[in-house]
Length: 486
Image (tube, rainbow, N blue to C red; front, side, top):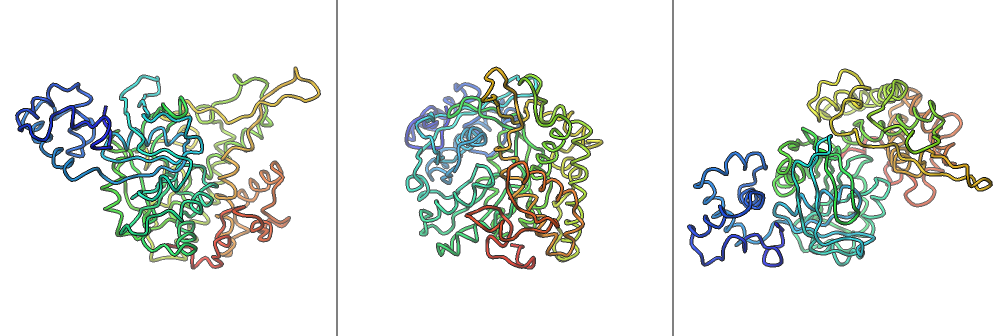
């Protein structure tokens, strides 16, 4: 078993040899290792993906050189310490992936007693056949930021978008100011993550932060057994990330981003976006989820008599939902075009419409919106989020309803569509995004919230009341569209 916690438990080097043994003994020890352990050792030393290692393993000279390089790496110490903040589906993949390479992994969890110190992730295909198993250890595990943040070189948020600001505010006091730089990022780039990091920089006078955000979650995943075992259903062919300052991208890519996907799965190398705004206005969760939920509501009333009749969220994507997505994407295109015109010096290369983004990140030939979901090789197992409801006056009468408490509503409206609506208003095209208005109105009536006035303009007073009600720029003190770029 491999771990990044050198000098302690499960040190892979101790499986190979001690530092006093000569290269021949190290070489022999490596050859005698099980195939998977041998691959991990070579990959650590050479930073190669599994498929490349397997092609090289037959060469004894390569193996001996790899072990020599690994010894040098061990002598220099472990790689960066990553603190994962949040314990949802993504953490069950990241801990094994990062632990499988050269990282020391800390975990901030609200339920530390429910976590095992060793976490497994199976990479499976859509027929549920296991292609590869990854294992990683947790170095520090706590529900107290003071325990896991101070030694972190990279702080990585894995949680619903609407929880980002609260988490950043709580962890900020424990960021190590003595480090030359600390990378603070998130696994999903919706909602202007740069505004959130600037907020804590100002409040806590932090001068050593590098903020970053991954555009789309690099893989499809789920926790099979909370705290111990997750599944990855494959990765995107290409990933995008925004970094501020921009010149720190190469460093971040070398020490972290490559280990998030590509070195494990052989796909998913990262490219650099010119701005966080490219990620905020790209069209993934913040338009897919509301469109599909609205389509299910219009077709079924959002209600089913049994769980078996609840549609798969993506695999059974229908024409009505596809039309909702098309209309919402058209509104986003109106705003994206206006942004490009307003900021002509920025390329916004990866600020794409839905189908162009789908074809780019999956390197697919999707013919249309509907088939991009129904024929997906990674999305087929995901069901629609529902809640089981029992009639209080008739216990025998129960059914399943769309779960209006899920992140499809709490993330994708106040930290998704509403931000785009605000930008549209600032650019003088607030009346040219009618389907954004339609979905926001549907959700605010469904959840008894208020974001828009009756004339479909943003109700600024309602949006800014309470703490972190929504993510529009004025909630960060940004009053002009000129100030939204990083």
